[in-house]
Length: 267
Image (cartoon, rainbow, N blue to C red; front, side):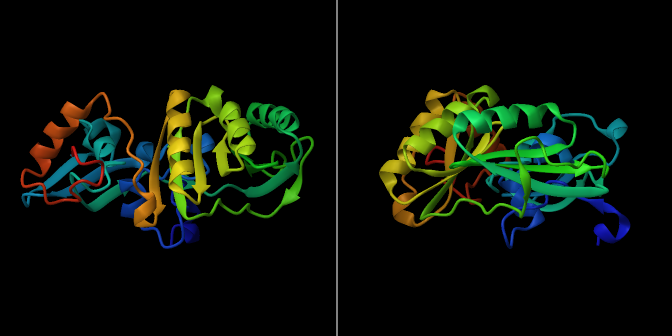
């Protein structure tokens, strides 16, 4: 419907079957975050159904009308533990005149150089590092959508797959270190250069925990977003803001009925 009017929700390209509410609740910003920012920046207004039956409206359809606490950003990534998203107002973008994918194989040092060049260009929407490969999405005017040096035109790259899927983030400057460790460890991954977000696919609990430990060692985080029950026991240390999280949970869901324990037994 949006495309018919020359528009798009740039963060809407979630996994197959993903809903608008699911993308927002899990903060799944997608591969184009480099160009369009995180998904929380595209949510202008939200209506939440809280655990005690209230409808809470926050934000505004125009920036001038917004006041008070930034509840839309609080709702994004809350995994439904504060309330069910019943209505949202989203920021849209015009469809780019042209878009294309390019890729290259080679050692990490070669891909590091290609990534640096791509990040300096104005047409890069995504710069993805994966085992032995780099994939770059460019969008914009036709004159700008050309193959970065060292790459060739390619299809949309597939995503990592395994028994458990972890998603997280590290400081952008640490992405190459994460990529080096993942490749040395034989882990299927996809890391977004210039952003720091990453996805890793593993097949056992020990490796899942190792991914989380390494991400935290780099100043980041990782969480299991899809896995068999026996592979979900990856428990990071409690966050620094746990006391605030508990108070928010009690305010929005005093009976504790909304996805209880989904963000850890403490919440």
